[in-house]
Image (cartoon, rainbow, N blue to C red):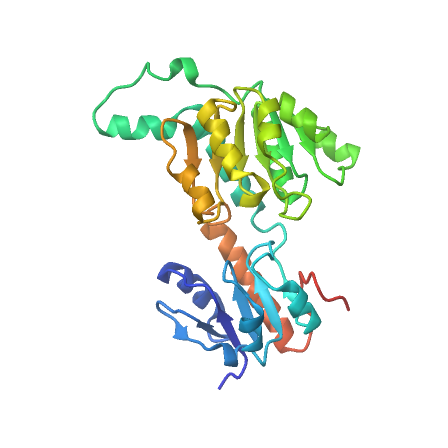
Length: 321
């Protein structure tokens, strides 16, 4: 009997469970806290936890006496009590760069959907209404526009790569500037935040949530943006002041927005109830493609093999050898 147990914390649909079970085969004992087709697992038996969005609190960690690794399926760790796991010397591994293509492709999809009013036109056409002229005066091309990218990391670079193919002008900001050769390759110009807010037709956010980024886009920033600006947020919800975003959309301070991540709380009820504005809301699906999760699960199982054989896992961010 395999005494090394991997426990997936999040509840998955049967298709997602099957991906990881097929990859695991007979080599790993993978269990699920809330299974759909797999085997039920218990915290007390887990050697490795796989975590997507599940709150990995001190209480959860204390119920895992055998715990040797927490494997994230993304890069954010705001759902994990990092101070406590580090104190306990439990490594946390992240999948840096794995979701970059999936998120970047969603960003492009959101921009095009907003620019061409696809979410407005689709239900009308399905009802038999022919609105071929309704939005022509208010539909746009990405070509020739100025796109401001907040964050020059793996996702930001993938977004820039795709934006470049649309013949758009790219501005970007990051606390770490890219080498000049990389900027030239991507056709990106490094500027300060105020320049991005003032000059961009499209602003897309790819920054981590930290004290320095929390609420960094609010009333003041919306007031200096172009009236035709759209804001894309596939990063973290609290980077944008949600109350200010609702007001900016209502008053026409910006032309549209798309958000793939927002907290389900009373503050955000305002944005979910908005009507008559150019707005797309999606439930944190930026990384949610088969292609990405195949890569992620394969990496997680490779790390599990390393841990079970007494070696150090890859992608660890909190424990240094």
